Length: 200
Image (cartoon, rainbow, N blue to C red; front, side, top):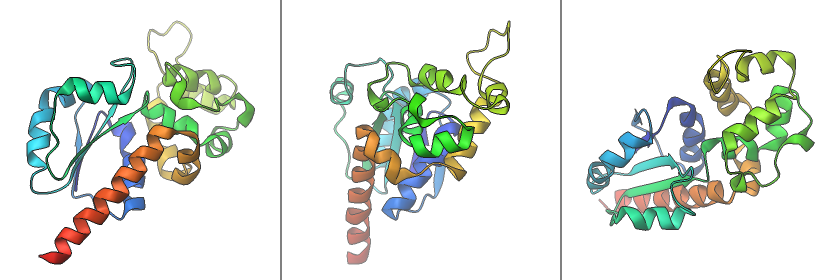
């Protein structure tokens, strides 16, 4: 399977979805932003005629809901192509594992949003949670005083580490409908692909 993501912080979470479904990843493409994904979407879709291609993109505020965004693309998916949208960002999926996140950054779980998919800006929400975290994680996740940066110097590295070591897909899927839909989609894709391969 080939996976395409906006950035490397998305990869640990997509890898967990693939592992859960029983799909092996042969190629990982870091598109470097959703603009590239949108421009290349038709090519990715065409490549999905022969092997599974899964594209994971943040919905952000590009549409009121995932369904409207997909309709706006006017894309007829090929047999093995799947487009999954994190509502509204992969950070929503991060926040969805409140138990794991609270332990990882040492913050009381009561400060973590209970319905992360409805957060308009999940990154901002995550940074608000980080303000209550241990001092070491505040330095990693939050920009320094006077900095023009939106996030801290080790924000991406910390999210990757959490995705690899602290995040639990099953817990997160219980609080994030978009993640749960992605999980169901990946499992169904795996079933269909394995059935196809076994018939060859």
